[in-house]
Length: 233
Image (cartoon, rainbow, N blue to C red; front, side, top):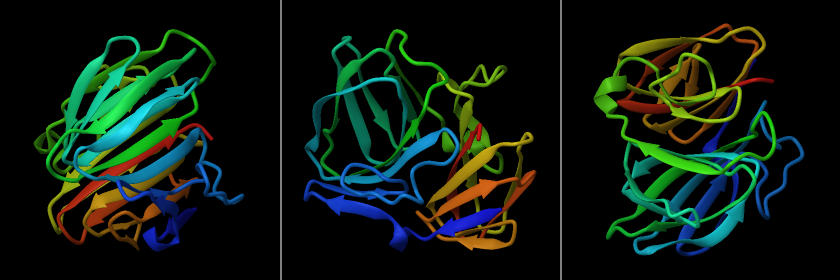
């Protein structure tokens, strides 16, 4: 089963400094049919104005993955972590028993991110934060695991959930495949460019909810950048 969710159908709110689109129910947007997908709970498409950002606020019991599409995001938290994550790179925060953090666009240009929340396998635990560069050239023509709680994904940022977050870049006309294990859920969003997935067109920033599909065959209609989450049901 593959269900396309057009960008135009997403919920959201424009706060001036933040233009947020929500693939799933979040904050003031509620849709009983879009409460999550497997262990994936939130996928926000955020556009953050220059020299603005999210002031300090708390989280607990959530794996929060930030994929930077354009610009850069600067993180700081009450554990003393501080870092700047640039376009194409990824940061992960395991909120665990509780953490307070802030996310700022300190740049002179607009920053665009995907913020992805995945429900952890268990509650509590020591909160952690980490970031890592993932050069787009390294994932040209193939899916690369960016964050994972799966054994063997040693090059990915660790998360505490039975899930993977993967990235892919394709030049127009190129293709790539991804095989799911049995009984998995997938959610795919092109950050840039139009693609076809198992013959279905998906435009930039559309969502694609996937279940009971053993393999995805992705063909780039334009130069494309793709993010995929693979989770337990």
